[in-house]
Image (cartoon, rainbow, N blue to C red; front, top):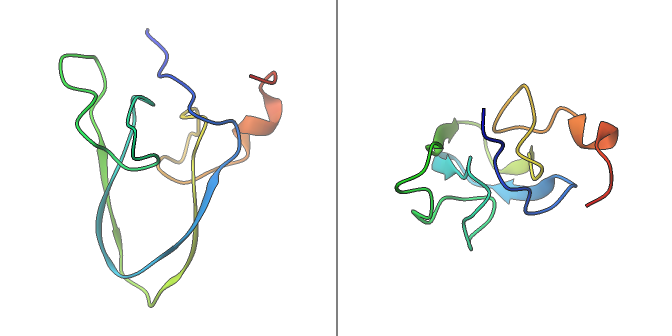
Length: 82
């Protein structure tokens, strides 16, 4: 299986308001960690997630290897430096 690109090894710490978001799964988006359509024609599709609680910090995966996508699970700590 093809691995997604890794835009950064660390997670993105974002203060998100309630709403719908599309997390970039391919790693090619210029709007990381959100999708900008760069995946088109490739094997990856963005992942929709919904924030329902009042704004708080969310840790979104930057390495694209988390088992709990789109959220960081610390897997980046086991990867070699970029």
